Length: 199
Image (cartoon, rainbow, N blue to C red; front, side):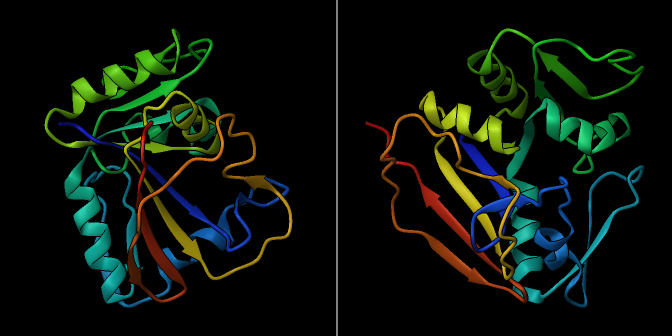
């Protein structure tokens, strides 16, 4: 069965971005080591340099995830990934309207305008036997509220931001009961993976 997994880096106090939408501090761990982990897409030219435990973690995650689901804000902050997600997988953007100029010719980025449930169905279909990664605070909250998340994966960065965009600011159906996490300690980050217990 295809799993739906939230994937986010957050500060220790729960922020995914600072007050100016900056993400440098929560993403510092991607460049805090000496083990190179290139992304699958040659067009992005992105190579992470992380600690050995984080490298194993990232390689496993990239092999596991077969499609990505994000919201419009994440899509825009990422510049639409130039039309190709860096992991070289289909990306689905849950949005109210397709942005001007999209979809780009040859792009693997698709837009879903009829709700989060439909977006998850389409991403699962594209992922096949692999997992769907969900990125972006609002999209993760929507999936959580709709009972669509199987796991929450947090890369907990060793920083306190104090203000900004919170990952779980508007969760409607609380408390959400989570199972015991798997824990991987990296450099500047702790990787936590919680199963979500659905009622």
